[in-house]
Figure 1 (cartoon, helix red, strand yellow):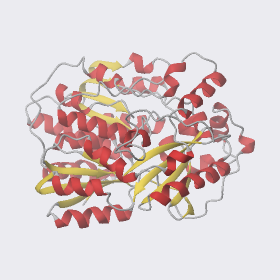
Figure 2 (tube, helix red, strand yellow; figure 1 turned 90 degrees about the horizontal axis):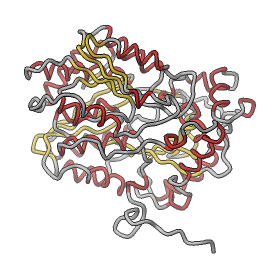
Figure 3 (tube, one colour; figure 1 turned 90 degrees about the vertical axis):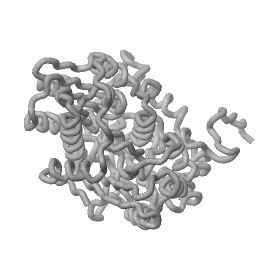
Figure 4 (spheres, rainbow, N blue to C red; figure 1 turned 120 degrees about the vertical axis):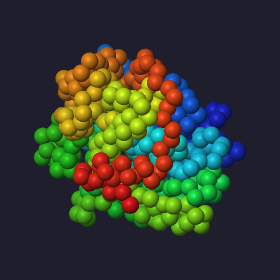
Length: 473
């Protein structure tokens, strides 16, 4: 028998299994958004959200050394095969709901992760809950350029997870363009609930006011997907990489660049054949989950609405326009903008300073270009602060610092690109709390406007977002 690994306090709940904070990947967007939204509803900022990503510690080291050290750092927190079998998705759901202050709410937002969803939830005075969560598991003897081997290893992990959690669908994503060398040391499994988990049912039954609203947010992006087994699907690349599905073909020049940067070899790239029509990408919402939300909410006379966005920038622009209108109706200028990126956001500080938030999903050229287009078509802002999140990898799809500077250049009087975030870009990460540190320097503009009513918010979103494909139903 091998050595028994001691379990640190706090990693188990009620004496069995793994607690949610151990299961959900550190730094995953759903985890950050729940933490940020819950803090804002408590009236606090994100100063204690310190996850910076493993690459932040290894600035200035040679690339091969940095890759190896990063893989080892992630390996220390990744789930083992045995721990994967101990995952309890219901406990994860309870961990999410327990982060919110214990009071009655006028409604709740559930569904796909999106930074603007957190800002929308705070403006409405409502929690946001994800329809899934991300896990990272060990891949011993893995290789960034071996997607077939990644699929085989992921299938074994998925079997263990699904045996204990039959209400999950597991989407495995192998994407060297967004994860770099880590795609060869660990596998990513995005778990999506196929039914409403018990903790969410309790939340809808006990924590919502009579006649509350339930808003389901759905990311409408699609991607080629291989149905590997019942409850397990495989995705090569992802929309957030800034690349297209064709860029993950063995003959792709962009793929060769990505693999070379991650320590792989394009000659080894032999992906599994994916012939099925594209399906919703990893941040989509399972149809059974939404149907269950509707059925359960109707029992308590809660009204269910849906917000479907075809691309992240569509919701980002609509919520930014909503915030500007909301602030101006309350007698504020609505002329100061913060462009957030990835995990660099703080809804409470945005509210405290009376800022308009625009959220970029990541630092890809595509994402930053959309922010530029929105700014070009908007009334000018007196100040623009930009928080570029360093992705920790090199990719031909990434925006350069000059492009980020161009975004800041839309400010009439103040044009600020956070120097700390930009230092070491794109390979050196900064903690999530860096957004808090920057936004704390903004002048206070309290009191905040009174919370928006759901009907008014949806009307504004429909007015500003429908031309770009935002569907409000």
